[in-house]
Amino acid sequence: MQQSELDFINTLRQSTRYIEQHRGKTCVIYIPGEFMAEKQSVAQLCQDIGLLHNLGLKLVLAMGANQQLNEAFAAENFAEIYHQQFRITTTEMIPCFQKTIGLLRSQFEASFSQANSHQPNPPTLVSGNWVVAQPKGVVEGIDFQHTGKLRKIQHKAISDCLESGQVALLTPIAYSLTGEVFNLNTLEQACQIAATIEADKLMIYGSESQLKGLAKQMSLPQLKQLKADNIEQQQLIEQISVLQNKVKRIHLIAQIDPSALLLELFTRDGVGSMIFSDRYHQLRAAQIDDVCGILSLIEPLEQSGVLVKRSRERLELEIENFSVIQRDDLIIGCAALYASGNDMAELACLAVSKEYQGQELGFELLKHLEQQAKQLGYKTLFLLTTHTHHWFIEHGFVLGDISMLPDEKQSLYNYQRQSKVLVKPLS
Ligand SMILES: CC(C)(COP(=O)(O)OP(=O)(O)OC[C@H]1O[C@@H](n2cnc3c(N)ncnc32)[C@H](O)[C@@H]1OP(=O)(O)O)[C@@H](O)C(=O)NCCC(=O)NCCS
Image (cartoon, rainbow, N blue to C red; front, side, top):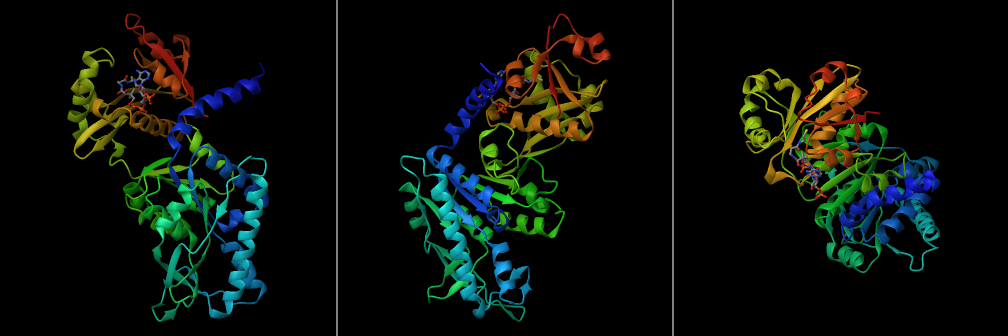
């Protein structure tokens, strides 16, 4: 068998658990106008949407059109008037607005039809007047005119559409109960619809500046406390923050990479940043006050021989090497990173409280330490374990031998304990 075939089979096997996890789940996907401007990316995305639909996901697409509207308004010599970062859409602009959105939607429907034409039962794309708009009004003396805000979502109609196996498409156009046309921010719509229908996932394609420096995983409170790098990121954080705990997972992925959607959903490490609101815990650097909590977590594991014994004094001295996961007042997870020779760092003392195992907290700690080691410039992570080598292999480590360890570790190796050596390059 050729390497490419082996790789394909391995990838398919590894994605099985995610296919199972996502089946039947509702996912809102925000596609910004900049993404919509790239024909190739749109064609790829349409194919991937068809694939996700076939894998049983219920999909709502929110199509942005900022770039297209900027171009269309400029072509008709409309002045660009913004207030509080929102475009003011005047009455004169409405025909151009409707034409631009109508054309973009039609182009998207055409791409979608073509991308899924080979399927025996191709998915259908449906859009409608699901969002009731109202005027944004006069703010600080400035009349926003036809720039509106969301008043109500016909969520039952959207849910019915998803239940009947169709893909829902939202655009920036929405109507008031008096029949007026409004221009609505699509990201705002995507967030509010995700919250209203309590979507399992909200996937947001973002620009480089919006995603700059974001950690791979964050809780919603961590995101809210983040000091934004720039104004676009600040706006994104503000819009996501309104979701509170209504959407379990929010994924931020790069709009320059159309494959990011599938990679984020079906690979272990993903490619974007995941914000979770379904777990209330904090992953942070350990402090001296955490020694008691860490000891009560690791003592049973030391007694059963899973972890090497650490005295309280040693733990106190080495507390700066530890990271912990805290839930309420309880330390429910810990792990430590130690500098070693040959550009290698050692991961040690990874433990998650029994009651909280199986929620990927161990994985979260591992990812955190990997990121920390990378930032410190280490090239390889290694560890010694007697009971847990399979778990680490499933998380990208490979079995090594004692000769791969830094010299001082080799001389301290406990031959009685016969720990397995595991290594992972930090590329
Ligand atoms: C290893 C450990 C940290 C994983 O924490 P976790 O938060 O449960 O990890 P995740 O949720 O990311 O992974 C859970 C999966 O790992 C599996 N797993 C747990 N321990 C395992 C082991 N020793 N070998 C193989 N798989 C294991 C679970 O069965 C579960 O599998 P599933 O998803 O198919 O149900 C945790 O089990 C633990 O504290 N173990 C005892 C301490 C230990 O062995 N530490 C490592 C020594 S350095």
